[in-house]
Structures are given as C-alpha cells and as structure tokens.
Image (cartoon, rainbow, N blue to C red; front, top):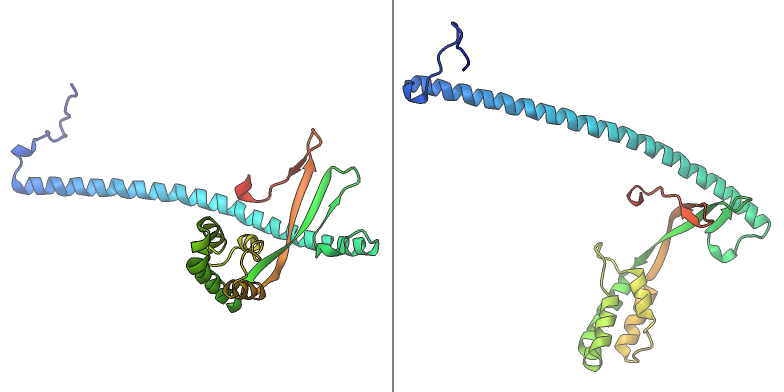
Length: 222
C-alpha cells in the first residue's frame, strides 16, 4: 500500500465533505476535464493541420507540374499536327484527334478532342412532345418498347439529356409515323449542337509482354 506523505492531504470520501467542499471538488473536476479535452483538441488539430498542409503542399506541386505538362503537350502536339498535315499523314476527319508513337513503337501519345453536347429549347420541346406521344399512344401499342424509349429520354443528375441515350433513341426514329412522333424527333435533332471544350491527352507505353498500358495521371484511377 502506498504511504501518504506528511504534506499530502488525506483522501476523503464525498460523504465526509461539506456542501462547499463538494461544490469545490466538482468545480475542480470539471476544470480538469475541460483542460484535458482542450489538450486533446489541440493535439488533434495539430496532427490534422500537419496532414492537410503536407498533402496540400504536394497537391500544389502536382498542380503546377500538371499545368506545365498540359501546356507543353498543347504546344508540341500543335507543332506535330502541323507537321502531320504537311506530310499528309493526318486524317482530315479526325477534327484534331490523333496519336503519335516513338520510333521503336514503345511509347504513344494520343490527343483527344473534347466536346460537350448542348440541347436548346427546340430539343426540350421535342422531348415534351415525344414523352406525351409515348405515354398516350405508344404505351398502348407496345409496353416494352415504350419503357425502352422513355429510358432514352431520361436526364442525368445535371438535368441534361445524355448524348449516348439520345443517339440510341434516334436509331428508332422510323419506329412510328405518327405526326407527334415525327415532330418530336425533328425538334430534338434540330435543337442539338456541341461545342469544343479543349484537348485531352492520353499516354501509353508497352509493357514487358508487348501490350499497351495507360500511364494514369488521373488521381482516382491510381
């Protein structure tokens, strides 16, 4: 058993304390608990700050590097496009997209042309007409086909039509000859356009088996 020093106050049970002593005891306990919680909070925030600052420092370095890489790709691939055009080695229908390999065919760079579809008010009106026609007329004729075609008109999370789905819908444009269907398809097609967003780049190298492997620069893909 630990011996109590001469200067150490004897340990008293709460039953032996006066109301004032109990109040003081509880106040000291709350103060100690608050100090402990504050210490833990500061320690947590210090560790969190270290991790955030360390990772974000690398993120900023990566951003600067990737920005420089993108600019270099753009400049050099523009020069390559001019050279390919000069020697007639680029497909005129490529619209800016092409690939180049090094001399031993072990490295490949591909430039892709990024576009974004746009649907104006004509397309939106066309969709309304098509949905009305499908719900009131087509559904009675073929429920399975109705469900299929309605699925092609569903919008994505951004509230926009999906290009791939609309293209699948248009493969069925001769499915009906009803005026409402024909008009809806016409408006849907007339209201579609796409605009150029920029160029993207893909990088590949051959592995030991001679197969192409993509060099991932997309953080989520690593």
